[in-house]
Amino acid sequence: MLSTGIGNGIAIPHAKSSVLRAMTMAVGTTSGPIDFESLDGSPVRLVWMLAGPERTIGLHVRTLARVSELLRVERTRAGLIAATSPEEFLTRVAAAERD
Picture 1 (cartoon, one colour):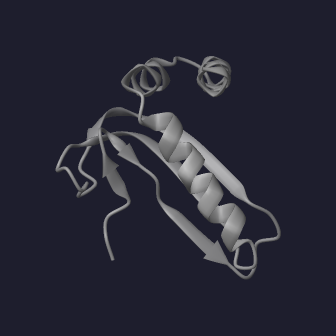
Picture 2: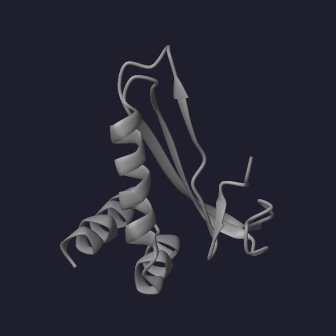
């Protein structure tokens, strides 16, 4: 298995479980860089965790793809890492969705 540290300071750990009833996400930034054995060797500052029911494979894959797509933009990544509150983080995600 490969690291879920996908590069550019981002990790997207994800899992499926028979005990979950709905897709669940948690997002966070780190106070400093952490080693995540990322594919590009760079430390991680943004962790976007995703867990969902085993039966929602399509939704799981689409969600991973969308998160990855949003985080490809350097301005978006930098803005999310710089956010100082959950509200600011969500505002920046919403702005990235509109772009």
